Image 1 (tube, rainbow, N blue to C red):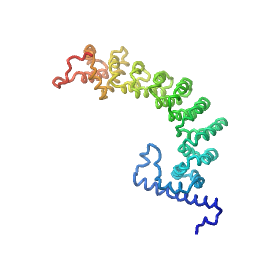
Image 2: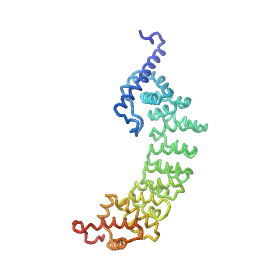
Image 3: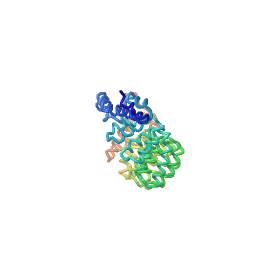
Image 4: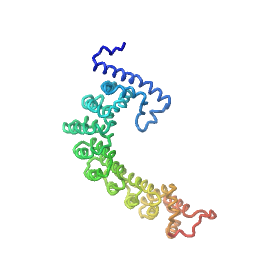
Length: 370
C-alpha cells in the first residue's frame, strides 16, 4: 500500500516529490563512481566546470513537476557540493517557476547562496528583473556580500537589459563589485558598452579594475579600442601596462610598433614590449634592425634580443625573405659580426643566414634591394 495515500492531496504530492528527490540524492555516489571509472583524471582535466549529470538522473524529477522544487532546494544546504550541484542541474529545468524560491535562498540562506546563484544564472532571462530589483536593494542597504552573490548570478546571464543598470551602478560600489560588473559587461558584449568603459578607464582608481576593463575592451572589440590600449602603456601600474602590451601583441596592429619601440629603447617594460613586437612578426623586423644601431648599449641589446625571438617565427622568416632588405642595410649588418655585444652578434648572424643562403643551395638572390 502507498504510504502517501492517506495524506491530504497537497502533502501527498510533496511527499512523492521528496521521494523522487531522495532517489536523485542517492544516485550521486554511483554517478561519480561511473564517471571516474570512465575517466580517472576527471577532476584534474576539468576546464569548463563540473561535468553535467546524465539526463536519465534528471528526467524523473522533471516528470514529477514543480512540486519537486522545494525538496530539491533542500539539497543546496546538505553540505555536499556534488549533491548540491546535482540539485542545480535539476531545478533549472523549471525555469521561471523556480526563480522566486531560488532568490529567497540567496537572500535568506547564506549556506545555499553559491548553488542558488548558480541556478539563477543558468535559468537566465526570467531571473534578470528579480535579480536587478534585489541588487538595487542590496546596494542601497550596503550589503556587499549579498550584492556579490546577486552579481555572481547575473554574470552568467548575457542579457542586454543588464547593461544600463550595471553601468549606473559601476561608479557607486567598491573595487570588487566594480570588477564583477566589468566582467559581466564583457560577457554581454556589444559596441554600446565600449564608450562607458573607455570613460571609466580614465577615471578608475583601482589598477585591478583598470586591468579588468582592458580585458573587457579586448574581448568586446580590441581593434576598436586600439587607442585606449595604446594609452594604457603610460599607466602608472605595471600590471595594467603589461596587460595592454599583451593585448597589443595579440592584436598585431603595426600602428603599435612606434610605441613598442619607444618602450624597447627604455628600461621599463622593455621585455614585455619585445614579446609584443615578436607577435607582430615580420612587420616589426625592419624597425628592430634599425634598433641595432641605437647609441644606447642596453637599447641595442633589447632590439637584438627581440630580433632573435622574431627570427624563430616561421611566418616572420617567410615575410623577411619575401621583402628582403636594402643592400646598404645588408652591408651594415655584415660589419657588425664582431660587435662587442653577443646578443647583437647572434641577431646579425641569424638575419644573414635567412637573407644570404649558403652558396650552391639555389636560393641565392642577386641583391636584396626592395
